[in-house]
Amino acid sequence: GRVLIVAGVGDSYAVLDTGSQVLRLSPDHLIENNESERERIKAAGGIIARSAHNNGDAMGPIRQWPGGLNIARSIGDRKCAEGGVIPEPEISQVLLPERTGGRLIIASDGLWAGVSAKAAARAVRGKTISHAPGILKMAAMKARGKEDDITVLVADVDTSERDLGCAPTHKEAYFKPHSKLVPHYPLKMTAHSSETWARECGHSEERLVCWGPQGMPPTR
Image (cartoon, rainbow, N blue to C red):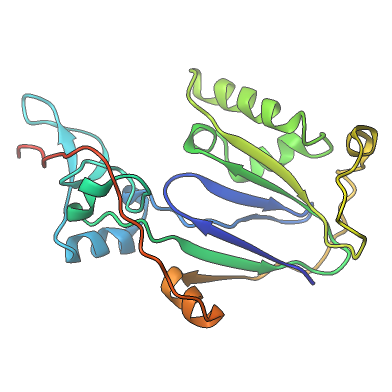
Protein backbone atom coordinates (compact mmCIF):
# COMPACT_ATOMS: atom_id res chain seq x y z
CA GLY A 1 0.00 0.00 0.00
CA ARG A 2 0.88 3.66 -0.16
CA VAL A 3 2.10 5.63 2.86
CA LEU A 4 0.69 9.06 3.66
CA ILE A 5 3.11 11.25 5.63
CA VAL A 6 2.18 14.49 7.42
CA ALA A 7 4.52 16.91 9.22
CA GLY A 8 2.65 19.29 11.50
CA VAL A 9 3.53 22.54 13.28
CA GLY A 10 1.06 24.93 14.92
CA ASP A 11 -2.74 24.97 14.88
CA SER A 12 -3.34 23.95 11.27
CA TYR A 13 -3.87 20.22 10.85
CA ALA A 14 -4.78 17.46 8.45
CA VAL A 15 -7.70 15.03 8.45
CA LEU A 16 -8.10 11.90 6.32
CA ASP A 17 -11.59 10.62 5.46
CA THR A 18 -11.73 7.11 4.03
CA GLY A 19 -15.51 6.87 4.07
CA SER A 20 -15.51 4.41 6.96
CA GLN A 21 -13.08 6.29 9.20
CA VAL A 22 -12.13 9.91 9.88
CA LEU A 23 -8.59 10.18 11.20
CA ARG A 24 -6.82 13.30 12.46
CA LEU A 25 -3.24 13.08 11.22
CA SER A 26 -1.73 16.11 12.98
CA PRO A 27 -0.96 16.60 16.69
CA ASP A 28 -2.61 19.32 18.77
CA HIS A 29 -0.05 22.06 19.47
CA LEU A 30 -2.46 24.34 21.33
CA ILE A 31 -0.82 24.82 24.73
CA GLU A 32 -4.15 24.65 26.55
CA ASN A 33 -4.87 21.17 25.15
CA ASN A 34 -1.42 19.57 25.30
CA GLU A 35 0.02 18.76 28.72
CA SER A 36 3.26 17.30 27.34
CA GLU A 37 3.96 20.51 25.41
CA ARG A 38 3.28 22.59 28.52
CA GLU A 39 5.80 20.51 30.43
CA ARG A 40 8.33 20.84 27.61
CA ILE A 41 7.96 24.63 27.58
CA LYS A 42 8.42 24.87 31.35
CA ALA A 43 11.48 22.63 31.18
CA ALA A 44 12.92 24.99 28.54
CA GLY A 45 12.50 27.97 30.89
CA GLY A 46 9.22 29.31 29.53
CA ILE A 47 6.30 30.54 31.62
CA ILE A 48 2.76 29.19 31.18
CA ALA A 49 0.05 31.77 31.95
CA ARG A 50 -2.94 33.56 30.48
CA SER A 51 -2.92 37.17 29.36
CA ALA A 52 -4.22 39.69 31.90
CA HIS A 53 -6.55 42.69 31.92
CA ASN A 54 -5.30 45.97 33.34
CA ASN A 55 -6.96 45.01 36.63
CA GLY A 56 -4.95 41.79 36.77
CA ASP A 57 -7.78 39.39 35.87
CA ALA A 58 -6.73 36.53 33.58
CA MET A 59 -8.24 36.36 30.11
CA GLY A 60 -8.06 34.26 26.97
CA PRO A 61 -6.32 30.93 26.33
CA ILE A 62 -3.21 29.66 28.09
CA ARG A 63 -0.06 31.08 26.48
CA GLN A 64 3.71 30.77 26.73
CA TRP A 65 5.91 33.68 27.83
CA PRO A 66 7.97 35.54 26.77
CA GLY A 67 6.19 35.75 23.47
CA GLY A 68 2.54 35.20 24.30
CA LEU A 69 1.75 32.50 21.73
CA ASN A 70 -1.06 30.04 22.43
CA ILE A 71 0.70 27.33 20.39
CA ALA A 72 3.80 25.43 21.46
CA ARG A 73 5.34 24.97 18.00
CA SER A 74 5.56 27.55 15.26
CA ILE A 75 7.57 28.57 12.20
CA GLY A 76 8.24 32.31 12.15
CA ASP A 77 8.38 33.32 15.83
CA ARG A 78 12.07 33.54 16.70
CA LYS A 79 11.72 35.71 19.81
CA CYS A 80 9.30 33.19 21.28
CA ALA A 81 12.08 30.57 21.31
CA GLU A 82 13.20 31.90 24.70
CA GLY A 83 9.77 30.92 25.97
CA GLY A 84 10.05 27.35 24.68
CA VAL A 85 8.44 27.65 21.23
CA ILE A 86 10.18 25.42 18.68
CA PRO A 87 9.78 25.02 14.88
CA GLU A 88 10.33 21.25 14.94
CA PRO A 89 7.40 19.39 13.36
CA GLU A 90 5.79 16.24 14.68
CA ILE A 91 5.58 13.70 11.88
CA SER A 92 2.87 11.07 11.51
CA GLN A 93 2.38 8.41 8.88
CA VAL A 94 -0.44 6.07 7.97
CA LEU A 95 -0.33 3.05 5.68
CA LEU A 96 -3.27 3.21 3.30
CA PRO A 97 -4.81 -0.17 2.42
CA GLU A 98 -4.86 -1.38 -1.16
CA ARG A 99 -7.69 -0.28 -3.49
CA THR A 100 -9.00 2.26 -0.99
CA GLY A 101 -9.21 5.96 -1.71
CA GLY A 102 -9.62 8.78 0.73
CA ARG A 103 -10.05 12.51 1.03
CA LEU A 104 -7.43 14.68 2.70
CA ILE A 105 -8.49 17.98 4.31
CA ILE A 106 -5.73 20.35 5.44
CA ALA A 107 -6.93 23.58 7.06
CA SER A 108 -6.01 26.38 9.43
CA ASP A 109 -7.65 27.03 12.80
CA GLY A 110 -10.14 29.31 11.05
CA LEU A 111 -11.94 26.08 10.12
CA TRP A 112 -11.14 23.77 13.03
CA ALA A 113 -12.06 26.31 15.72
CA GLY A 114 -15.71 25.86 14.73
CA VAL A 115 -16.00 22.62 12.75
CA SER A 116 -15.01 19.15 13.97
CA ALA A 117 -13.03 16.73 11.84
CA LYS A 118 -16.04 14.43 11.38
CA ALA A 119 -18.37 17.31 10.53
CA ALA A 120 -15.91 18.63 7.94
CA ALA A 121 -15.52 15.20 6.36
CA ARG A 122 -19.30 14.68 6.16
CA ALA A 123 -19.84 18.14 4.67
CA VAL A 124 -17.74 17.45 1.57
CA ARG A 125 -18.41 13.77 0.92
CA GLY A 126 -19.54 13.37 -2.66
CA LYS A 127 -18.51 16.94 -3.50
CA THR A 128 -15.83 17.84 -6.02
CA ILE A 129 -12.49 19.05 -4.71
CA SER A 130 -13.04 22.36 -6.51
CA HIS A 131 -16.24 23.01 -4.51
CA ALA A 132 -15.19 21.45 -1.19
CA PRO A 133 -13.09 24.36 0.19
CA GLY A 134 -15.94 26.83 -0.31
CA ILE A 135 -18.37 24.48 1.42
CA LEU A 136 -16.05 24.18 4.41
CA LYS A 137 -15.53 27.95 4.56
CA MET A 138 -19.29 28.51 4.76
CA ALA A 139 -19.62 25.79 7.40
CA ALA A 140 -16.99 27.54 9.53
CA MET A 141 -18.67 30.94 9.19
CA LYS A 142 -22.04 29.44 10.12
CA ALA A 143 -20.63 27.58 13.12
CA ARG A 144 -18.65 30.52 14.51
CA GLY A 145 -21.00 33.33 13.54
CA LYS A 146 -18.18 35.54 12.28
CA GLU A 147 -15.61 35.88 9.53
CA ASP A 148 -12.03 34.73 10.01
CA ASP A 149 -8.99 34.10 7.86
CA ILE A 150 -9.33 30.50 6.67
CA THR A 151 -7.02 28.40 4.54
CA VAL A 152 -8.39 25.07 3.26
CA LEU A 153 -6.80 22.49 0.98
CA VAL A 154 -8.76 19.41 -0.16
CA ALA A 155 -7.14 16.56 -2.10
CA ASP A 156 -8.24 13.06 -3.03
CA VAL A 157 -5.77 10.29 -2.20
CA ASP A 158 -5.64 7.53 -4.80
CA THR A 159 -4.18 4.16 -3.77
CA SER A 160 -4.72 2.39 -7.08
CA GLU A 161 -1.81 1.34 -9.24
CA ARG A 162 -2.89 3.43 -12.23
CA ASP A 163 -0.52 5.89 -13.85
CA LEU A 164 -0.56 9.14 -11.84
CA GLY A 165 1.58 11.07 -14.30
CA CYS A 166 -1.26 13.21 -15.70
CA ALA A 167 -3.90 15.23 -13.90
CA PRO A 168 -7.51 14.34 -14.79
CA THR A 169 -9.44 16.55 -17.19
CA HIS A 170 -12.00 18.96 -15.76
CA LYS A 171 -14.79 16.59 -16.76
CA GLU A 172 -13.08 13.56 -15.22
CA ALA A 173 -12.43 15.41 -11.96
CA TYR A 174 -15.96 16.78 -11.80
CA PHE A 175 -17.74 13.47 -12.31
CA LYS A 176 -15.44 11.27 -10.24
CA PRO A 177 -17.64 9.34 -7.71
CA HIS A 178 -15.82 10.61 -4.61
CA SER A 179 -18.51 9.30 -2.26
CA LYS A 180 -17.98 5.68 -3.31
CA LEU A 181 -15.17 4.81 -0.94
CA VAL A 182 -14.33 1.19 -0.22
CA PRO A 183 -14.77 0.08 3.44
CA HIS A 184 -11.63 -1.37 5.00
CA TYR A 185 -9.97 -2.30 8.26
CA PRO A 186 -9.13 0.57 10.67
CA LEU A 187 -6.01 2.51 9.78
CA LYS A 188 -3.12 2.63 12.23
CA MET A 189 -1.10 5.80 12.56
CA THR A 190 2.43 6.11 13.92
CA ALA A 191 4.07 9.32 15.11
CA HIS A 192 7.69 10.48 15.02
CA SER A 193 9.62 13.52 16.10
CA SER A 194 11.64 15.14 13.31
CA GLU A 195 14.84 13.87 14.94
CA THR A 196 13.56 10.29 14.91
CA TRP A 197 12.37 10.71 11.33
CA ALA A 198 15.75 12.04 10.18
CA ARG A 199 17.57 9.19 11.91
CA GLU A 200 15.31 6.48 10.48
CA CYS A 201 15.41 7.92 6.96
CA GLY A 202 19.15 8.53 7.02
CA HIS A 203 18.81 12.28 6.46
CA SER A 204 20.42 15.10 8.40
CA GLU A 205 18.09 17.51 10.12
CA GLU A 206 18.38 21.24 9.46
CA ARG A 207 17.23 23.33 12.40
CA LEU A 208 14.91 26.23 11.62
CA VAL A 209 15.00 29.58 13.39
CA CYS A 210 11.78 31.35 14.48
CA TRP A 211 11.04 35.02 14.03
CA GLY A 212 8.44 37.24 15.70
CA PRO A 213 7.58 39.99 18.21
CA GLN A 214 8.89 40.05 21.75
CA GLY A 215 6.35 39.59 24.56
CA MET A 216 6.43 39.66 28.34
CA PRO A 217 4.53 37.58 30.89
CA PRO A 218 1.38 39.16 32.33
CA THR A 219 1.34 40.84 35.74
CA ARG A 220 0.04 38.50 38.38
